[in-house]
Length: 278
Image 1 (spheres, rainbow, N blue to C red):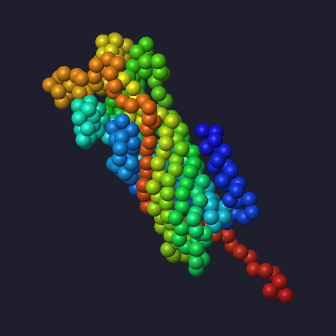
Image 2 (spheres, rainbow, N blue to C red):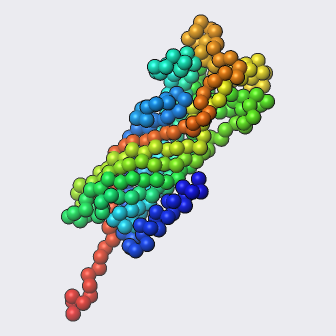
Image 3 (tube, rainbow, N blue to C red):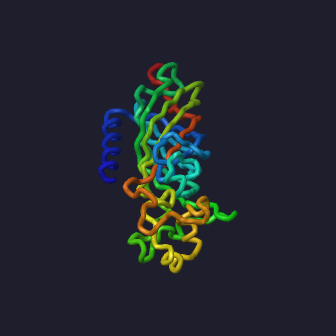
C-alpha cells in the first residue's frame, strides 16, 4: 500500500515539477457497476447495476491532473447464472450498495486544453486510492437480510479465527478513459475503472463451510440457512459439509465502474500585457 502511494506522489511530482497549474474541471459520470469475486470469477466486463459519480478535477498541466470523486451504485451476482456445476449447486447470491470516495492521478497521452482550437482530445490512464462502504445482503423467504452481522462463515466465533469483517474498506482504483472537448469548455468522456479491494467479503463468501450445529447454536438458524443454500435446489439436502470449500480465499474481490461523463472546465482568465496599451 505504501509503495503504491509513493509511486502516485512520484508521478505527480515528476509531471508537475517544471509546469504551472492550469484548470479546474467539474463533472458527472453515469454508467454501470459490476464485481469480480466468488460469484463472478472470470468476466471483467460483467456490469449489472447502475452507478453515478460526481467529481472535481484539478489539471496541473495539459498532461496530468488529480480527480476527487464520489461514486454511488450497487453490485450483485447469483450462482444461478453460473455455467459451472459447483457454483450452480452452491446456490448463493448477494447484492450490495457501494459508496466510494476516491482520489486518482490521471496521465493524458496528448495535451488537453479545453476551449482552445486544438488539443481537444486525449486518452488517459489513472491510478489512485479510495475508501468505500459496502454491506452485502440476500433475499430469503421473501425478506432481505444483511449478511455481515450473521457471520455465515462463523466469523467472530470459535468456528473461525477471523473477526466479522468491516463494511468500510480501502481499494486501489485503476483504469483507462478518454475525453473530448466538444464545444466551448464542455467535455464528453468515457471511463472504465477497476477497484482492487483489500477484502474478500464483498459477496460475503471467502473460506469454508463450518459446522452447522455449532453455527446455529452461536449465530442462529438464519445464519446457518444463509450459509448453505444448496438444499433449496437439491430437495432439501445441503451439500456444504463442514470444512469443505465455500469460496476462494486466495483472491481478493474487485468491483468496477464504466460510464460516460460530461464536464465543464473553468479556464483561467489571462490578463493582457499592459505594455500593449502604452
